[in-house]
Length: 68
Image 1 (spheres, rainbow, N blue to C red):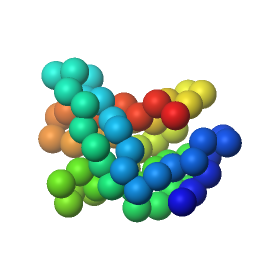
Image 2: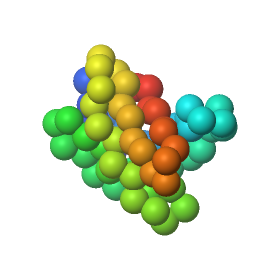
Image 3: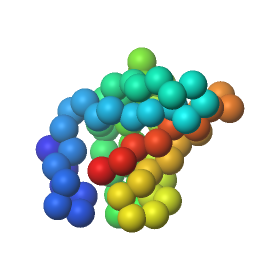
Image 4: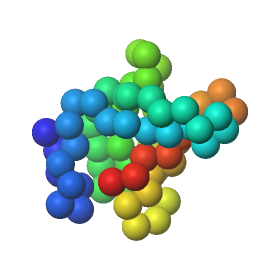
């Protein structure tokens, strides 16, 4: 398990698609200081730190957000 800003990342992380307001569960892979690498159904998603505890990723024209 990794830790970001006193938040422990688990193997599964919930993210929201802002285009359709659906919640998905992604698999945690790794993180750096400004990003979190995950996989959604085997497809890699790289979440970039946007502000405070908000991370954003884009895939196939859809935006996904992760709030920690």
